Image 1 (cartoon, rainbow, N blue to C red):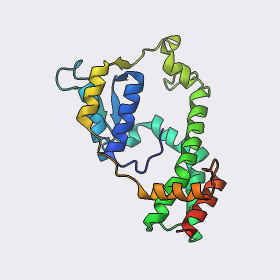
Image 2 (cartoon, rainbow, N blue to C red; image 1 turned 90 degrees about the horizontal axis):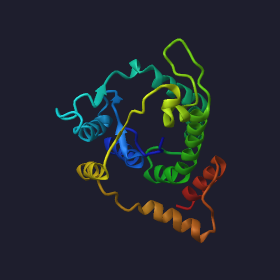
Image 3 (cartoon, helix red, strand yellow; image 1 turned 90 degrees about the vertical axis):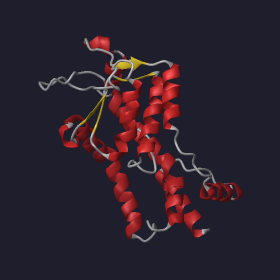
Length: 222
């Protein structure tokens, strides 16, 4: 799980997918997404990575379906909202209601990203680690009981099958070459924020209160 500026960008989704494919040196047996446009590049890359197994252009490598029919991931998002994102939604809404944050002000939005994206990533990582290390009970709904990390990395202990499809480094490199993400322009705002912090001996925040104070400081020194 990664913090990004937009979860609606096909390039962001594809980048995260390829990063993990490279890390694991393989791709999933099959990927499943809803029909959102943000998933288009990922689906194409998955089909390309699997086309050696399925000669008909990666047939059956990716499956589209309605998001509401994937109850497991919908349940996960509900859980994530309750224990993490709901708090942040209300936190930023309070900043809006107090006229501290202006969503139509580019400087405010860049400052918000600079101050909070690292804190948000830490919060999300904590939820991920908790979820992947907690015990899932057996149920009558074909759910395999156990700890997610153990189920994922040691599937044979649960009489399951590892669905990772090994890939050569050449294949992964070819996929990344086909994708060719757009180069990001230098962020002048970020350079300015670092300049202000260095000249005022300010450390990067490690919690939401410090991030909030830094946001106020940067906005008021504009």
